[in-house]
Structure formats: C-alpha cells, structure tokens
Image 1 (cartoon, rainbow, N blue to C red):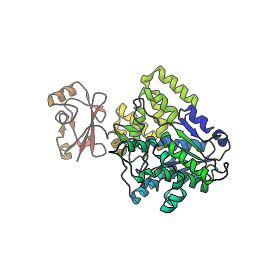
Image 2: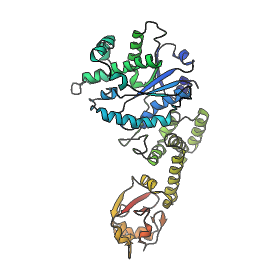
Image 3: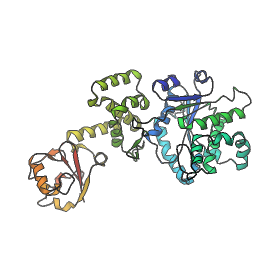
Image 4: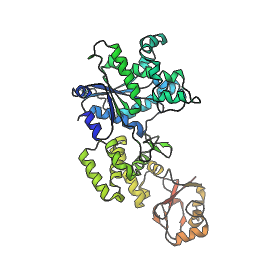
Length: 429
C-alpha cells in the first residue's frame, strides 16, 4: 500500500510539507509520529482519524510512534480554541494517558516481532527535564515572534482583546517543535502526521530540525496532514447533539456507537465509508451503487456501522449489538442480557414504580400507561389497549392486561411499547 495514494483516493490527504516526500516514502521502514493531547480519559470518533493515519502508515510498511502529550498536555494547544484552556493537574494527565493507551494498543500493532511495530512515548519524559534557560537558548532563538503571531490560532486570539492568549499557550509551538526534533534524534523519526490545523506546528518542527542538523540529508523532515472532515451540515465529526462519540465502551456504549453510524445522513455516508473504514475501493464502490439504487434500505449505513463497531469493539461485541437490534425491532426484548438492555433503552423515556404493587392482584396496565409517556390519560390508554397498539416486553397484550412480577426483566424492568417505535421503560424497586 502506498501511503499517500491511499490517503488521496480516500479523500483524506490535505497537504504535505518537505520536498521529495514521495521518494522518501518509497523506502520501507520510515518512522512517523502523531501527537495526542490527554485532555480526557478517552478519545472520540474525531480523534480516530488521526489514529487511522498511523494505522495506515503501519499497513504501508512503515513504523508509527504514538506520542502522548504528558508534557504539552500540561500547557494546552491554542489551535481551534477561542479561549484559554483550563490547566490540568499532573495526576489527571497521567490518568488520561493510561486510559487512552488501551485504545491505541487495541488498534495499532505494538508486537516487537513485527518489523513495523509501533512505539508509544510520553513527551513529559523529555520536556519535563528541560530547563527554562535551555529552552530559550536552544529552541527559542530559532523562532521568530513575527512569524508566530501570524499563526491563525494566535492571531485570532490577539485580535480579540477579550480572549487574549497567555505566554503559556503562546509557547506551545516551541514545545511541539522540540518534540519533532527529539524524536528525530532519538528514534530516527522523519515524518509528522496530523490534522490540517497542525500544519504550522509541523513546519515549525521541520525548521528546528533543519537548523539542528548541518547536513541537509541528515536533517530531512516531512509533514503530512489529513483533512479535518465535517458532516454536510458543517458540524465536526464525532459530535451528536453536543455530545462526543467516544471510543471507550464506558463512555459511549457499543450499541450507541453502532447507532451513531446507522443514523448517518445519506448526504454523508458515501463520504464516510472511505474516510473511516479500511474497506477496499471496489467494495465501497459496490456498496455505493447499491445504496444509490435503494437508499431507504440503508445498506451503506449498515456496512459502515458493522465495520466501525467491529474495528473499535471487536467481532463478539458487534454480534451482540446486532442481536440487540434484531430483538428491538423484532420485539423479542426478553432475549437481551441485563447490560445490553440498559444500553439499548438508555435513551428512551422511563419512570420508577413501587415493585410491591406487582404482587397479589398486580397492577392494571391501563392505569399505569397513563403514568407514562405513552398515554396522556386513562381514557386514551384504554383506547390504545383496545386497538391492540400496546406491547409488554415486545408482546402485544389484551385490553385488561395486569402487570405482575413475572413480567419483570432481570428483576427490575418492564418495557412498554405503543405502536412500532414508541418505547417507555418502567423501573421497579
């Protein structure tokens, strides 16, 4: 696989920096790094594109380095920010790094028997040892303030006096440039890959490397950026109603993750297939043709959801999610295990009830229904029941149905449905 060509046909390549980069990449075993800020204890779908860059780099016969920003994370990147970041504690950064590391180890091959084995490094290991005078003399002298203030992330903050920018965030570019130099010296790293918003920082690192090495060949350094992809409505990828779609199951459940891709708009799904998946072009073309003929069947969305859920969470989890989807739309919700039931019905309306009323004569469904979001009154509830529009745990019931303890799923929940899609979870304690 040719790395740059792979990015091109998938529509991900934004720009490159450094002459003769194509020639440089013809030699297998080149080393590239991508940096990740530990601002949270997980990573989002938006971060995944940067991870995919490293995965593609490795599949192209090169060696990737995952750089965890244990040092720069204590400072904060001003890129894409209109205000100062809140500084994190060392303990919080270390915790976030330990949690994020699991995601990288799941997606990238770190097995030392692989000649293209990946490496994880933490820039606090070297940035934490630098003295202030040393940084000013060995790094700062190579940077022009005139050029730094022209950088978009800095210029925007300087032009807006209410926002401003601190010397701390202003200095971020120096630290990131030093990362590239350090990895060049210690790991033979010649390429930095990142999102297009990092292009200025990449070039700054390349300039620092060139100044450090007298020989142009020894000081060769390159940059590759991917497009910052957005949906057709202009929103950033990975945001849904203001909530991030996380790669960790404890932050976004596998079922919710699957549903995020299933709900992809028709205007986006054909672009998402090459962007996010590793499907070959022929397979994507076939799915695209089938989708265009019958978009209502959502063939492309299902292919995207299956691929991404399997990639991030594994084949067993994908099978469990698919079974949950089938149970939900087929009505056999009794087949769901306790954890999957919680995930599937986490977003539906719910109410709490006294479990003791299920004993003895039980609880009248027509009376209870009026206490849920499925009916506004007992009269309306009786009408729905008489019309056969109400189901208990996926099974339609008679108008005089009485809820009892045996209706409880996993000892605590009874699921009510009106029509095809209107669910309400009653929780009994």
